[in-house]
Image 1 (tube, rainbow, N blue to C red):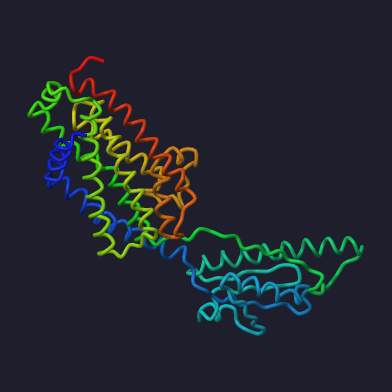
Image 2 (cartoon, rainbow, N blue to C red; image 1 turned 90 degrees about the vertical axis):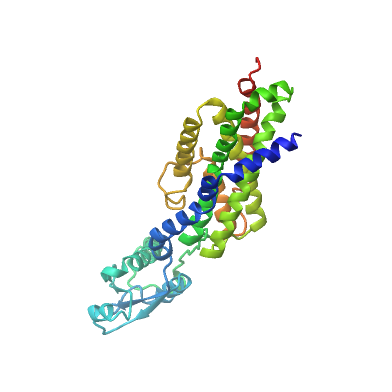
Length: 369
């Protein structure tokens, strides 16, 4: 193991001030800007407080006896159903006594809403339409069986199927982007290699390595490990700063840290391939950042993967999707069903890029293939 080479390269990487600033402070600034920009979308539009729905039932309605079932379903969805027999609909909505008002007749209903209660109205519409669809379907079936019309059905004869589906909790914008951009900038950690590459070319290190008969794998490890260590160290500093300054909740800390370790190694191995494929450092960096940007776009680094409409077959090509989803679910649920795929994806990148990187060391050290 080339410990001296690892130590010297690590020092070179950590001495670069502009890389340190980019990897430690820029993530925090980006998190602050994006979490504020998308705060309303993630923190307000999708977090509805309990609200009240007023209703008026016409006299002799066939739905009279089944309203208690509807009220129970509303209650389970944090909606209070309150009857108003002789109330002014407009006055109720303007006074905000109710968020939505529903006029129920013999065979239909009409929903009234104010302009600022569109989400509450949509929820009410969903509950009412599902409920009355099942009720009317039951009433039609019983009517056919009895071969005569039913003006009124006792509640015991009407069975309404109500199922609550478990959904994943939605993180706040601060937590989401606070986690996502720590991961995104960890992938940018390959930029630390520029400090070593420029120093090697100035000092003709590759020729010295060839004279010393150092193996390709040792020379490769001598750059991969310090790059991964520098990336992880810088990522952890950004992580700590974001938690202290922005109060970001990561949930399963140990599991998230393990994912960040694998991410740092994978990003470094990926960067090694690019720096060996393109002998120009600027081209390597630009190519790497473009590929990372594309992976981030598909994986939820810019538009959240929760509400994105990108085709899933494209999303699943991005390693950042699995990483992002895993660490975000660690925060919201404490576990993630995507953790296994995430680890498999990262290990595959490390192995494939590692093999390719060692094979490409022939050109780096000036040896024949």
